[in-house]
Amino acid sequence: MSNNQISVDDVLYLADLAKIKLTDEEKEAFPKQLSSILQYIDKIKEVKISDDVQRDFRKINVFREDKNPHQNGDHRNAILEEMPEVENDLLVVKKILNN
Image 1 (tube, one colour):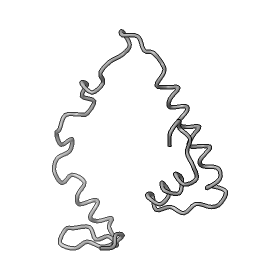
Image 2 (spheres, rainbow, N blue to C red):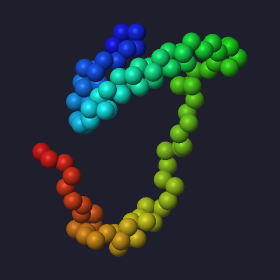
Image 3 (cartoon, rainbow, N blue to C red):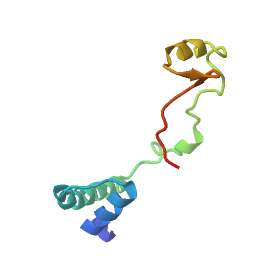
């Protein structure tokens, strides 16, 4: 993947990791598209930001205070009443993952 050139083999490897199947058209188009995206990212990296604009955003807490915005159980009963199946006050859902 040097020089941001993505090969068909790279695309097939990524598709295998993502567990997706690609059509022949996608196998042909994706290397060029992904290479183009990586080239654009390289251009963005070249942008110079002046010191007065540049910040270390990791130091700013953008999350809310860790507190419960509702009284415990405010919505619990309403949710349980809407579920088609409830067992011991737990929501019963269909299994989506295999062992």
